[in-house]
Amino acid sequence: MKKILLAVLIVGFIVTGFSMNIVETAISAGNFTTLVKAVQEAGLVDALMGEGPFTVFAPTDDAFAKLPEGTIEGLLNDIPVLTNILLYHVVAGYYLAEDVVSMRSLTTLLGQNITVHLLEEVKIDNAGLVATDIIAANGVIHIIDTVIIPMEGEDCL
Figure (cartoon, one colour):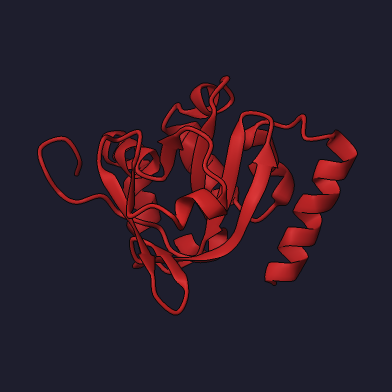
């Protein structure tokens, strides 16, 4: 699955010459339909199509499917919480995998830090990296296998 997804993304990049932005890249991959729908519902499409650069830790449809039943529907009906979760997956700046693994944490657009763990595999909070360094015109995407959730607090959930 990882190899197929990566091959689709590479072919897309060759064809477009890296001219697709982050949102267009996610749409063309076909494995981020839930993420794209969430970004649309939260009104973040224009922001993620903007100049950037952004680093996005993008959960796949399989990652969203791991959430408890009813969670996605609940989030789609609670736009402030959905927006916070989505902003927790985005970092301002351009960070390739080699940059990410040299850091202990990265500050997200939500203002909270995500933690980088270097164990047997690299983890972003509790999410494993599936593929890295997917270049878009306005940033880079790293695919993760789990939706990461910000810590609760007055500014988050």
